[in-house]
Length: 121
Image (cartoon, rainbow, N blue to C red):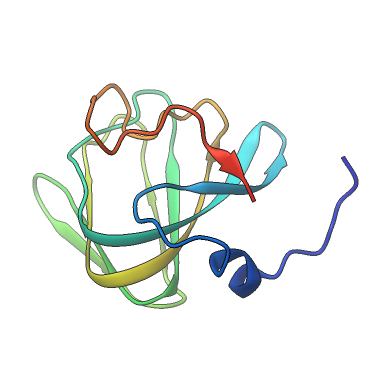
């Protein structure tokens, strides 16, 4: 695949659904994904993979059983593998995710928002 310049704003304008990450790049077995989040997601973990959240627009809370991390635009947080978490966005937030290609959307938790096969945009 030939590398191309990616404009994040243009990519975010290609979709409107929430909690459905879209793949925009891949490198060294890792995927770069964009997602629009709104509301509360589902408690889950990723047994074998770390997960990076970078807030592009809006704000995001990542709830843990013992604390909450609040992220604003331009801030990021890496959820360590095996740590149960629940992302929450009171208003729509635009997020860039960086995680291994093997990462399941909701880990081993099955939910009506779980996505098995992510789309490239």
